Each structure stands twice: as structure tokens, then as C-alpha cells.
Image (cartoon, rainbow, N blue to C red; front, side):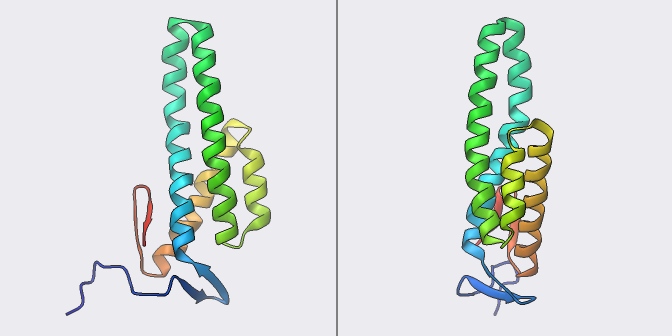
Length: 132
């Protein structure tokens, strides 16, 4: 008896609309992108909270979170862009990470594309990405 909630048994690659995807890589790098989105959302209240205590310390915390967000986001965006065969778009989004809102919106756009590909292949997509 088949369990309808388990992920389909595949070799990790499939051909949808003429493009071959590696679902393990998509799920792996989508997790990086989702962590970068969460870090972006967490950075704003931390910056506001710490800058009210000490402007110097708040600036240091903001810079540290900004660097961490860019690092995690860059790894996720480039890897997910390569896995989704969207190289040019991933480079534009990676450059957009250095600007606040454009990078955040680019992360959401790339995450949405990855979720759509994984769902179309029959995988469950949770809070931190696809479960492969």
C-alpha cells in the first residue's frame, strides 16, 4: 500500500518541460535561501533594539548580520540558480543582496521558483525548503 505523504522515489533528477533538475541540490540550496530570508527578517528588530541601547554596538550588530545574511544568501542564490538553470537571474539576485529590499525580494522570488519545481515533482515543501 502506497503512503500518499511520502516523497516519490526518484534518482534525484527528472525531466520536466525539457529541463533536467537535480532535486537534492534544489532542496539543499533552497534551505540556504530560506535561512537568508529569516536572517533578513531577524536583522531589523535586532538592529533597532541594539541601536537604542548603544548606537556603536547597534551598528556593529547590523554589520555582522548584514555580512552573515549576504554570505548565506550568496551561497544559496548561486547554488539554487545553478540547480534551477537560471544562471543570469541568480547573478542579478546575488548582486541585489547588497541592497536591502531588492535582495530580499530576489530571495523570495528564487525561493518561490524552487518550491514550484519541487511541488510539481511531487515533493513536500516545508518551512525551510523541500524534503527530499
